[in-house]
Length: 135
Image (cartoon, rainbow, N blue to C red):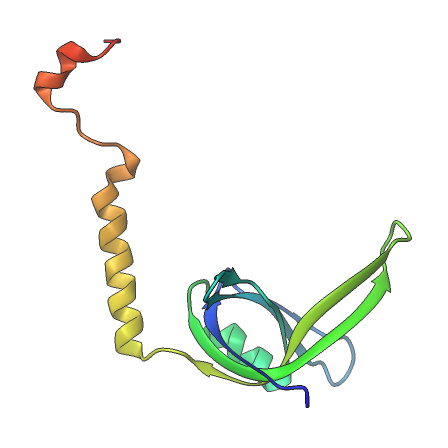
């Protein structure tokens, strides 16, 4: 049985393209950051048709999604004549991995954290100015 179940966040906005021809089909490719006991994995994901259109409309970098699909491997010859092997998850169903309220709270925390860092500079107390090796 070939069945994959994943929950993670998009590492960047999905790359969505449409096939040529009369029956153009959406194809979305993206990478998920999936936490594991030993760190984080970054599987490549491919969605087709309605799932790809959903990804294009409703997701962006950082969106948490849950999906099921199947593992697919393959190979092709690149422009340099080298054989390239790949592994990806082909989506059969996909949905949000967090509620709208959770997403809004997370976005608020991220905005607050960005404001708190104040462009990455820290304040130097006035009394420490005499101890600095430069002025």
